[in-house]
Amino acid sequence: MPRTKERLIEVGLAAAALVTILTTVGIIWVLFSQTFEFFSNVSIISFLTDTQWTPLFADKHFGILPLVAGTFLTTLIAILVALPIGLTIAIYLNEYAPKSFRKIVKPLLEILAAVPTVVYGFFALAVITPFLQNLIPGMAGFNALSAGIVMGIMIIPLITSMSEDALFAVPMSLREASYGMGSTRLQTAFKVMVPAASSGIIVSVILGISRAVGETMIVAIAAGQQPRLTLNPLVPIETITTYIVQVSTGDVAHGSLEYRTIFAAGMALFVFTFILNNISYWVKKKFQEKYE
Amino acid sequence: MNSAVKNRIKDNAFKYFGIACTSFGLLMLAIFIGNILIEGVARIDWDFITNFPSRNPEKAGILPALVGTLWIMGLTAIIAIPLGVSAGVYLEEYGKKSRLANILEINISNLAGVPSIIYGLLGLEIFGRILGMGGSLLAGASTLSLLILPIIIVSTREALKAVPKSIKEASFAMGASKWQTIWYQLLPASFGGVITGIILALSRAIGETAPLIVIGALAYVPFVPASPTDEFSVLPIQIFNWISRPQKGFAINAASAIIILLLVTFVLNGVAMYLRNRWQKKVKW
Image 1: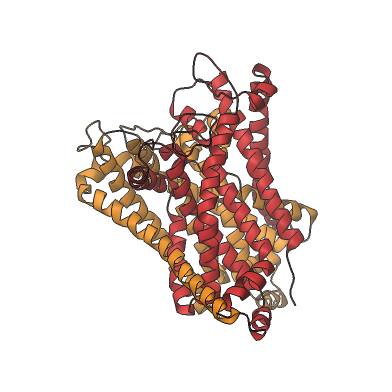
Image 2: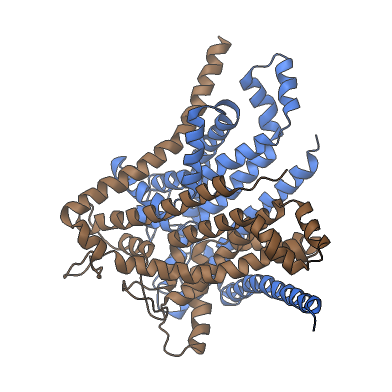
């Protein structure tokens, strides 16, 4: 009898693990079925090429490009902030800072990562936007710039901690060899350590991008809700995620075309992040350098 | 100036740049918390915690949202902990080399990268509509459970991996079955790591806003939810709602509610960090 019990337990545990597969199947099925319905009303060509997104207006256009542009713009700003600062902190902590300093700073940066995103949104709207409006007269109250900057601050800990792990994994002997050749810490960092840890650093950046693309509350609060095809960071825009929130907070009947637009938008979002995550997985597998 | 001197200057310049960047990150954290405290701390009193939302910012309170957050946290824990720990045990101890385990592993790392708002779309359609839960607490907790499942699974596996092989072998040598070994040896030995992962996952869940908005959680709730099938709001949604209003009074309310949300988040994270450190120190095999 004990053997049957063991077997039952194993089956039960496996069933729990299968929930994760069901989740993936569920996500793909929900997005595909609703998007399929959506494309029975809207041609896929106008979805991909129309330059206006106005599903909630009387004159309806269903071009995803303005939402993609908004997402691209905020993501770009976020990475421009997070990559140099995050990577510099990682190099500084690994190559320069005393161990005790590193021990204090890392948990503090982890706090930044634990803050809920709605709080970052408040920060963007209530602190960063007024500050930037003093510097840049004529900047709109909702804009891509402050949302992007705050999103960058949010992503710094992610890039720092993953790059730092990658740098930390490079064997000491490489660093010592470089010092032995008379290199400074800076030369060692950029000519030996960073190249040796490049796969981990690239992965951290790709995951940072993926995080920024999927980020919702900061942009919903601070970047505005006006889809427009622009790369001007000073005017209100709308990202894919914000559109989904905008429709969800309103009153949209189930099964209507407006209801399906959020799944079509979600599909676009899912495709982007799926590609990014798989690139990072591939980079990790392919370029991981193994040291003995 | 020869190149050695130049290099040394560059080296030092980068050092200060590094310090500047690190300070920037910490400074932002400080401004951030300082600003919210200055704006919001004066508004927090007992009425703020026990009042219902109102059109008058001075009378508005967070009671329904706070109770909603506690409900969501409890229900999510009940759903996600058994599922996540079981799945972690299965992957680490049973299905290690099978094809299925390989697929599961790739799948979990992919799920961890799916934006939270997509889980909202999943919950809206599957839990809300097909299973008929609507915008109830149960639908919200189920959605968040799926969202945090990868975190619990990964941390359970890490904790089990850290238990030395000798313990397992000793248990088998005493004639214990596989499940007896897991239940009486491996899980108690990895308890600290498992619980840390669970707390971090739950702290992530109570900060989530977007998926709950998508499944239809309400912005205005004039009642305290009393059962899992009730509609609800949570603190982050209440904050989002207040931020979206133009009046200054609501911005202050938002800051006050943020203080309470941050307090809960930081306490949970602090407990997790404490347990992790204690566990790492105590366990010397």
